[in-house]
Image 1 (cartoon, one colour):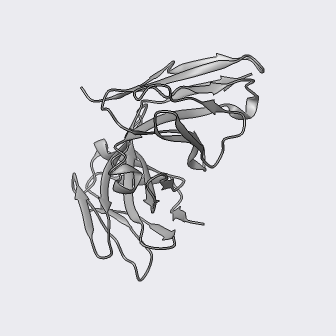
Image 2 (image 1 turned 60 degrees about the vertical axis):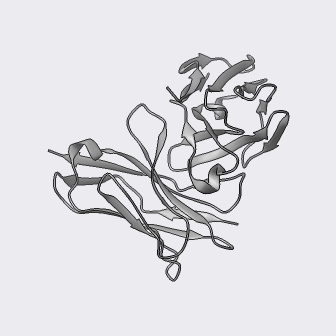
Length: 116
Length: 111
């Protein structure tokens, strides 16, 4: 089954404790992206990757890091989480040829993060 | 920069009512336009799309027409069901690297 998986689905942590949210897709997609969803703000892009070893900032990259060492994986790293990073996070992937402009993005189920 | 504005929710309707969720956009060039749907506890799914002016996207009884003259892409359905309860996002993309989402409209359908 074609899918994007994220782990963990729920996480409660404390300020300053490094954490990683994993994202994996099994569709051989070149493009992957991380978003955060906050009430009234919709989805905002954090980082995206056009292919292995190619990453770039989205609209709200501060406080986050990513890496793309393999095509299928795109982890999101919070080196020193703060309460304002409490949010619902989504990973998404698509083929580059179609890409976001073609609308064929596939989303993971989301990770709800709470930073105390 | 590019942006999407959609009507605020929540929208509450009775089953079999007619649905309209308004969406307008600002963009340079000729973006592709989309509606995504998010069911409770799930990620977003593409509902429909239109890639050029006057195109009509349709899926599951939902429709939206790309209106360049009014920069709009309103979502409509003639008869909603309880199972349509979800959050709906209007979005646009004019590049290979980015898609911009509206703030979302929560729809609740009463039996």
